[in-house]
Structure formats: C-alpha cells, structure tokens
Amino acid sequence: MGYVITRLGKNGHERHTGMYRDLTGTPRSAGTYDSSETALRKANAAEDDAKAGRGGNPKRSRATLRAYIETEWLVHHVIEDTTREGYLYLLRRYVYPEIGDLRLRDLQPERIRAWLTRLSSVHDANPPTVRNVKVVFDAVMTTAVNDQIIPTHPGRGIRTPPVARKPRRTITAEHYQRLHEALADEPLMQLLVETDIETGLRWGELSELRPRDIDWDSSILTISRVVIHLRAKTTQGGPQFKVKHYPKDKEWRQIKLAPHLRDKLREHCTSRQLKRDDLLFPLPEVTGPARRRRPIVLPDPVTLGFTEPNEKERRYRHGTLTAYQAGRCRCQYCKDAVAVYRAERRAAGKDNPRNPRETATDAERHMSNDWFRHNIWNPALTRADVGFRVTPHGLRHALDNIRTPTRMLAQRLIPEASSAVCALQPTPAATSLSADTAIQGHNTGATDGETTAHLATVTALPTPSTNPAETLQGMDPDLVRLVLAGLLNQIRPTAEPTEKTY
Image 1 (tube, rainbow, N blue to C red):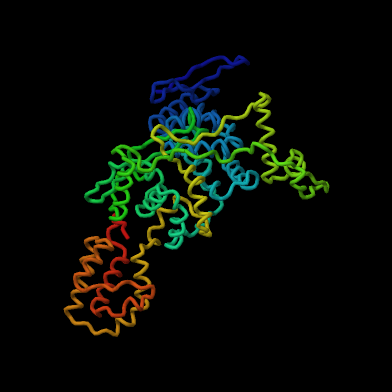
Image 2: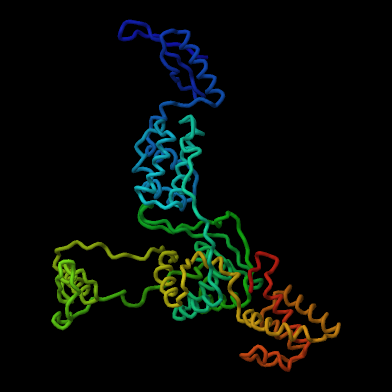
C-alpha cells in the first residue's frame, strides 16, 4: 500500500512525495507532486508495477556503462574464461573509449548507430570486428533490460555491415606430404600434425591428450578435457593454462583411431617412457642456441660499402650506427653494429633493458597455440610452399582431403583399369566372392596390410609397378575386380562419424 510524505517547499507551499516498498521491502519514491491525491495514485501504481515485475530502481540507470559492466555485468555473468578474455578486449578497445562514460539511460539508438558507424570509419574496424562488438554490447544491454535498469534495448534493430562467408580451403594429400617432409627434423611435431588431421581435435583438446585417454586394445580415444590459454593482459600473475574437464561442446566423445596411428602413438609413449598422466605433446625443451648471437668482432665498415641514397641523397657506410639510423639500412651488418652498441650500454648500466621474453607454459609444459604457430607451423608452411594460408585449427577440417598411399594408388588404378574390368566376363561365384570380401574388409575396419593379406589367400598379387596398367597385367580377372571393389569401399566414407579412419 502506497503512502504520502508531506513537506514544505522553499516557497512555503506543501509538496507531497508518493512512497511505496519494492519486493525487498526497501522504501522507494514514486515522485513529488503538488497534491497528495496524485502522489498517492503514483505510489500505488509504482507498487503494483513492482509486484508485477515491471518496476525497477531508476537510480541504477544513472550508472555509466563502464561502471555497470565492471561492477555488475562481468561479475555476475556466467561465461567461459576465454570468452570473458575476448569480451574484455573488445570492451576496452572499442566500447569504453567511445560510450563507456555515458550513463545507461543516455544510451539512445541514434547514439549507438553513430558509434557503430565510427568503428569502421575512425577506428578502422573490419565488419567481423564490428559484428563482434555489437554482440557484446547487445549482451550487456539485454541483461540491463532484464534487470529493469533501462526500459528498452538501445541496440535493437540496428544493423552492422554484412560479413561475407568465405569458402573453407583445406590442405590436400600433396600439401600434407610436403608438410610432412618439412617437419622431418621434428618427429614429435610430425606425429602431432598427423594426429590432428586424423582425429579432427581442437588445439586445446590435442595439447591436453594423455596416454590414459587411449584404450590401446579397442583403439578408442576419449576426449574429456581441454586446456585453455589465458593471456597475460587479462589475468593476474601472467599467462595461465587452465584445464577444463569438459570439451567445448560440453560433452565427452570417443573417436576410433586408425591402427597405424594407434601404433605410432603407442611407440611414442614407449620410447619417451610416458606415464598415464603425462602429456602426449608437451612443449619441447629448448636445448639449442638462442635465435641469434651478436658477433664478437665486427667487420671493418670500410670493407662493406655504402647504403642506398636516402631522401636527402646521402649515403652511409654499412656496419655503422649512422647507416642504421639516418640511412635506415636494416642489413645484418648494420643491425649487428646497433646490437653491439646497445649491449655495451647495458653492460655499463646506462640503460634499463626489458626482461627477456619467456615462452608461455606451466608446470606440466602445456604447448600454446601461439608457440606452435610461430616456431613450428609457419616455418613448415614456408618450406612446404603450400601457396595459401593454413592455420593449425584448419587441420581438423582436412581429413576428407587426405588419402593414404593405398587410397592414392586406388585412385590411380581405377580410372585406367575401368575399361579393362568392364571387358572381363567374371563367373557368378567370383562376383559374389568379390562383393563379400570387399564388404567384409570394409565393415571390419581392416588395415591396408590386413586387406592385402586377405586377398593374397585367394591368389598371389603381382609386385606393384610405377605404371598402373602394368600392375594389372597378369592378374586374374576376378582378382582385379576384387581389388578394385575393396579399394572403392575403403575410399568410400564410413557411415559412423566417430570412426574417422582412412
């Protein structure tokens, strides 16, 4: 029940304030009026709105957007740590500088529309970034509307620039072969890339794999955890690696490993003497020299020649500070001269150098995606000359394009042998045997070696030749059909999505 508080104004006239209690029992004001009847009517209406869930505290809308996000929204909003990290970056980079100091009740649609336009024109944000910023802003405003802090959503109906959907481009078998050869000096990374392609794991799942996750008898890999890497700028105490006991889709899943991959992983665990709880792919120990060491003795600049003319048509000798600074030369001789000069100043205590960068890891030596990309993946892409940008995350989409040597041989055999097979006249028994054998080999998940051994029980296979046509010569016609049928069934994708073998 509302009530009225009467007081005298500065001019001596009576003023009437309508009062009511919200759902928590806290006294609230419904406004001050000239008549007590109006004040009481407003108080009763506000109390009815509060009981119906339509009332709110108008004072809360006086808070700035920055204060509301930092003190209420981020504190009580249930989101993943990596999502919170991404939200904080977008808020601090694009939201706070423009509208962070505006009060919530002052956020009007026209202001929000102008702000989103300035993101592209002033801050050079691309359309995907503008869309992501709008997603974060909409999440904050939706919570504010649900909490009855503001009456309407200021961003509702405001459109962002369209984002083109680009086709995904993945590596092929030839690309994979070149990448595999480019990683010849890194057997651990070779196995990591092969495991990623065959299983389709995300990086956080791949870098958290342990021997206990593999059932060696059934070749079943269970994905039950994921490790996330939180950067230093948004966490206290520097970068952190946090293990979550559920994958991204919040559901454990199992994958059937190909026999050859299972054997490689088992050999990897045995050779490195890994225990059940050790990481399969930890960050390697840095045992080699630093990236570059400054020379002990610098060459004589007189023997190095001169730089190209600068904007003032002046030239400087290589291997000197003036060539690096005034001539803007970045050859190795000029960079060595600057490195030696700065080292001498640091040794004399004249400069305060920054601490050397350390590789982000933790006690278990989890490998970060950044380290793998910069130190392993990008150099391998350069050596392999793939020709387009491929990310480590893109490996999980490359399974359908990768073929084992047996499948590649089948692809070479089938086009050239199709006409010869059609001309053959098989017996009914041989045709039935071919189909049954191919189905049996496909359903049992037999490896290439097991399939070959099974076929060898029917008749001896000739030695494969570099020419597919020569390979088919001398073979029994029924065996030709049997081989091609079996290979075709191996190339055909399996029905169950969990058995990603090839």
